Length: 194
Image (cartoon, rainbow, N blue to C red; front, side, top):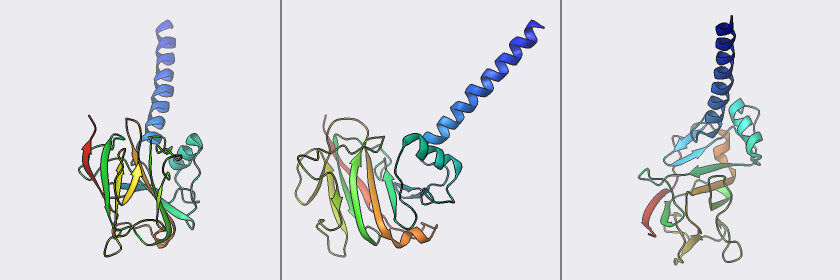
């Protein structure tokens, strides 16, 4: 009798804690349900829409993030460079290539919780489409670094993990679900502070 009760309590504890751990993992995994990946960039195009999956809705509720509706825009995040190494605040990166057509776009560096890691009192916290210097062919080259750089420079500060966030406002990409034809810029690592 006693072993039956202990076995039942143990089974219930495993079910509860195992279920909670699997849900926590599903909410924290970067390339989770409903994600679309283009190179190093990940987006959740259904986030904020009626078609959003339950895990995405739970992630939004848990983190308290404000998401764009499908007609408003699309957000892409990159947590690794083009060679697959994790982004670090103390490193210098060059974001180079073309950005998909949008009425307006912003690019900023963030921590793992997507809070900006720039100092807004020293430099603007983001690079944006109306103030960026463009390359021939309408491409961009943006240096993300803790050290001043000529041209388009996005300042970072501190040490630790970083995420680059690219938000496209009023873009034609929000109408389709297939991202295979999209070209997004590369994230190239240059060097790191010791």
